[in-house]
Length: 161
Length: 293
Image (cartoon, rainbow over all chains, first blue to last red; front, top):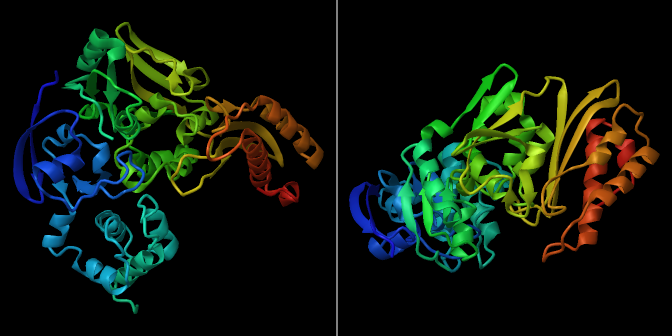
């Protein structure tokens, strides 16, 4: 029998205290305990990228992190980035460039795209593809997704689309 | 799938981690970045009774240069290796290789110690350790042990580490400023495990190799330091010489077949990489004529 572990962390700016089983991964903790269902679980072994969230400012696979590992950490999910308006322009570009398709991969794509734009404000299409290479789109909407990220990068740096 | 149930212990120090490993041995697994262990647990390939989480042991993290030795702490993340000026200056081969390890979200968590201890034969870093002549430093109940990289990797997911030992650091000789390197892998998708890859470190003087270390990966059950590279040292490399070395390399390989490639395809790709590597390091495009993947 395994024992629960007490954890205390910040999720989208709010303090969360919980008692969790060690086997509970961060994605399930966010989805089932906190009802933050924007974070999606696809493959559960780090291949698809649908569960991408930010932990202490860095994007990570939430299926490859245990909830117990986030004790004292700062976690940000798609709900946090969306509600704060941080990625409003990126979301809008996804809509306008038809990059949404079924939407299952979108939260992870937005997380990865925002991470790229924070590090490299003027990426070329090859850099965008490389940074998003860890995120699968089952509808194969990659062209439109790269378009949307490129459009956002140009708009943020004041360049013509 | 979800991991099966396990107990969890957060190690408070290296000594504490060693106590836990001594007490639980093979029933315990060390959790560093978790980017290899947690997928294996989610797939139920590994079902430990206890996870010893060493993620908080900050003294195992970081890159330092002392004289002609580069020391990398086991918990140094792939992203730290990519950004490290010390790695870029003294072991640029490793930097090139890390850029091909998985994806940004995985590189943010994965560690060099976890990667090496996992010993995946298709992984980039074990082959780099062979090419760079690394020493793996392990600590156990009887103290510290230094293991040469070419004695460390023992098979698929198998290393010279005992269940009571913790990989704490890696030491690399600082590469001479006039040394050169080559890294390339064939993969279905950028960041995927290699179908075949090559990490090479060399010294070229007057158009000849003064030293050449070829670390192949995904060509057998462990990374391979190709002995046949010796035939290229201190000789005038001609297409005939290269062809002979290519045949000798073929003898050394024992590639496995899987969904990505047959053993024959891996043999072919290894020889393509050898030719491209030699041609690139010697800046001799004539050696590469007619070779295609």
